[in-house]
Length: 127
Image 1 (tube, helix red, strand yellow):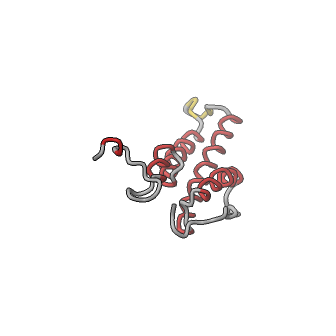
Image 2 (image 1 turned 90 degrees about the vertical axis):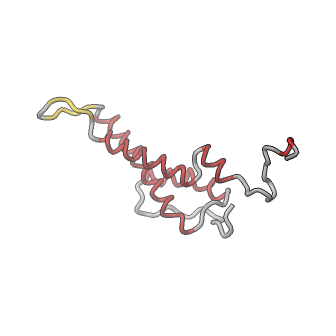
Image 3 (image 1 turned 60 degrees about the vertical axis):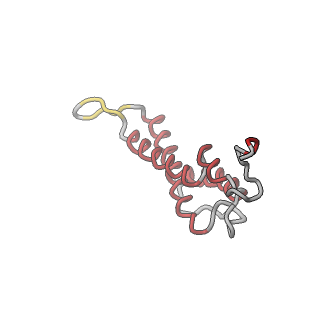
C-alpha cells in the first residue's frame, strides 16, 4: 500500500480508444483497492491501457481481414501482426510495472519485514 494512494477510480481519459477504456475499467478497481497508485502513476496506467487496446484492435483487424495480405511481391503476413506484437511486449512490461502479473503482484504486495502482515518464511526455523 502506498501512503496517499488513490482511493477512487478516476474516469478514463477521453482520448483513449474504447478498447483501452475497457481495460481501464477492468484493472483500475483492483489497483485502487490495493492502494498501489498515486496521481503520478496514471501516465503508466494510460500507456498500459493504450497498449492493451492496441492489441485488441490489431487482433480484430487480423480477424476481419485475414492473417495475410497480397502484395506486389506475393503473400505476406498482415502488417497488424507487427503492431500487435510490439503492443503485447509493451503491455507485458507495463503490467509488471503496475503489479498486474502474478509474480509482480507478489513482489509489490508483500509488506516490508517487521510490518504487520509480513510472512517470514523462516519463522519456523527459529532463526
